[in-house]
Amino acid sequence: MKSVILPHLPDRVAELIREWGVVAEHTRETPDSILVFGTREDQAVVVKVIKRLGDEWQCGPVLEAFNGTGVVRMHSFVDGAVVMERLRPGHSLADLALQGRDEQATEILAQLIRQMVPHQAPRNIPTVQHLAGGFRRYLVSGDEQIPKALVEHAQQRYLELDASQTRIRLLHGDLHHYNVLFDTARGWLAIDPKGVVGELEYEIGAALRNPCERPDLFAVAQTIDKRLRVFETVLGLDSSRALAWGFSQAVLAAIWCVEDGCPVEAGEPFLALARAIQPMLA
Image (cartoon, rainbow, N blue to C red; front, side, top):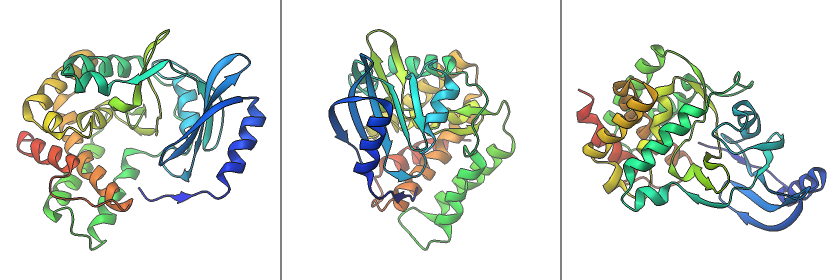
């Protein structure tokens, strides 16, 4: 999704480190954030400063709402920045899936979702309905990288699902393999929530389209079906709705790639998933 890069980021990072009393050890930069690894009152911590006004801006309030249950513990936050516990060794759940242990990885994701029962959603968290605007923006943009018929089908299913949601609550909003890390003391934990308000079946979409570099693994009917059966068993959700959400979200994720300036070709992984799911919807 389109976002605006904030000016004077190094100054902001330095100011937050001082304010939070963090002794910095080293930093790492990602496309979306600056991470500072260090200590605070003899505790290993990570300061995350978001670069852009965008969908991770409210990660602090979202972490606070989950209160460390199934997620990394948050110590302090301001808009667009958070200081949290450091997870060690911190390898991602993607490793299991990529090593041929996909069902185990899916089970871990499902158990995490089961643990992540939030308090009331913070203010200004987008809803599933709000995110549907991506379809409208794309259809009037004139871009032709994603087939119009596919976008229209995804939009139709998305709006139908949105209108018939049940048990609406705060969700992580981007819960996939790379956003689940292992900690020796606490086990597998979710990181980097975007936060969205919707039904539980919506949460499954990100997991279905990851690990994103292996469409040969996830964009296959057999894998999709196996994953959905695990989520259904552990969470008691409606797998047919989760499947339809996965289809619509895959197309929406491809739209966001276009909006971020990335080329989307015919073999793009998210579109591969959408095409794999489409005949399963019947």
